[in-house]
Amino acid sequence: MNNAKITDLKDESTGANAQSAQSAQVAHLSANSNAIDCHSKAEKETILIFDFGSQFAQLIARRVRELNVYCRIVRHDLSCERVKEIQPKGIIFSGGPASVYAKGAPHSDPEILKLGIPILGICYGMQLIWYQLGGKVGQGKEREFGRAVIEIDKGGGIFQDIPLETPVWMSHGDQVQGLQNDFFITATTPQCPIAAVQHRSLPIYGLQFHPEVTHTRAGDQLLHNFLFPICQCQGLWKLEAWIENQIRSIQNQVGDKRVICGLSGGVDSSVVAALLARAIGPQLACIFIDNGLLRDGEAESVRETFQNWFKADLHVVDASSQFLSQLKGITDPQEKRKRIGHIFIEVFRQEAKSIRDARFLAQGTLYPDVIESGGALDGPAQVIKTHHNVGGLPKELGFDLIEPLRDLFKDEVRRLGKQLGLPDHVVWRHPFPGPGLAVRCLGEITPQRLEIIRQADAIFLEELHQADWYRRTAQAFAVLLPVQSVGVMGDGRTYENVIALRAVQTDDFMTADWSHLPHDLLGKIATRIINSVQGVNRVVFDISSKPPATIEWE
Ligand code: XMP
Image (tube, rainbow, N blue to C red; front, top):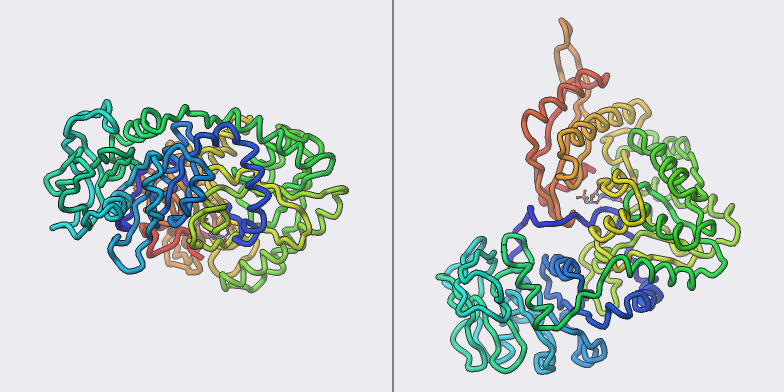
């Protein structure tokens, strides 16, 4: 599997509200026992996804969850003993970038193959099974990336209800070779004579292509065939039941103490607050810190949502002058982040003191954050990503953590938000970084420069909404550049600011492509900004992908 970027996969992103690796680690024990209580029934049909370093492991998990089956991503070297304890209904081996025969390539315990638990190997996963059972794996004549059409031998089994000629998505250099008596070949392509296999006596299946990506049209049906007829799952993972269980579990954990929830206005913390409001009502106190770096109307919108919608005990702290005075003259992006993070913790600490009997702190940590920061029990071994969230609060604050979303993906959080009655503009809000406009106002931060960016950003987002493009971009925003450019307005020469517009499509925010917004729309936005935002005479559109650029400009 290579690391080519796939941009139009089916779902929403994970987003920016990641918690620090440290807090995820600290919390994982208590939260995991919590999770086990919550899903006891659904967990009886757990699917384990062994991660061999694939960029698609989370996507596989989401596809499985979409079929209402609970699953966990686990490290590739999880022991056979541990698998027996967990008693999964099925196992999926993910793809991965290595060659199974290379020194140091990730392998799983070969004993797992003999347990009689249904196993589906995808790409590298299929090659590993083949290799561990004595077969040969080597480089194909040509690497195969992108669309291919498989020819299915007889159909039935994992190919039940799938046309005998079906387009799939391939991404591999290696392939299984030779023949093995234990397996029969179930599908081929001209370039890949062994595109799918099935073991003759064990419930083991291999696919050289990727059923989890939307380009494999029959992917959902394939996963359905594996999960239901083969693994005999019933589809017990339902969000409604999860909510009821989670509410009971929060009530038991909290007792008569109070819980503080730090609100950012983003979807994750909003959903946590809504869930807690449902579970413990007046025992919940929310703190929202206005750092003066918010977008147009943001503080009012949070206040409106939480005071009118939930009647929550909301503490809005206007600390904008504190933040802005500490940022005066600072242009270095990391220094900006450091200062903002520091003041944020201090302001939060002060406000939290005013909430009597507070014992718990609720945070919107999501499953991808837990996995990526190495905090999942049995989860993938390596820390994939270090988070830069300034909203992460240190454990020295002395609260016990409640992280009710740590088992969920972003799309599930959005569904949960809908079920809990949050308005659409909260549920579908793009991620917004903790340091806010500070990292979009390049160079010095002054109230005047913030005002320019606020107005430009508001116009951009308004136009995206109107043109029905907001939900088709994962993140979109305006950036104020630290340069001036020459222009002409009326009969006069101007020397004014440049606004850059950034809009991206991404599945996980770790890679991203620029959104191909229609030219007419871009033209309309640029004209509106230049005509109505004083001090701007030029608008440019950022067409860089990540990597090599990042989504934010700082
Ligand atoms: P980059 O710019 O690294 O951003 O491609 C990836 C995602 O992370 C968000 N981001 C941040 N979020 N604190 C945050 O809470 C930060 O300091 C920060 N920097 C970037 C960014 O908005 C995007 O969603």
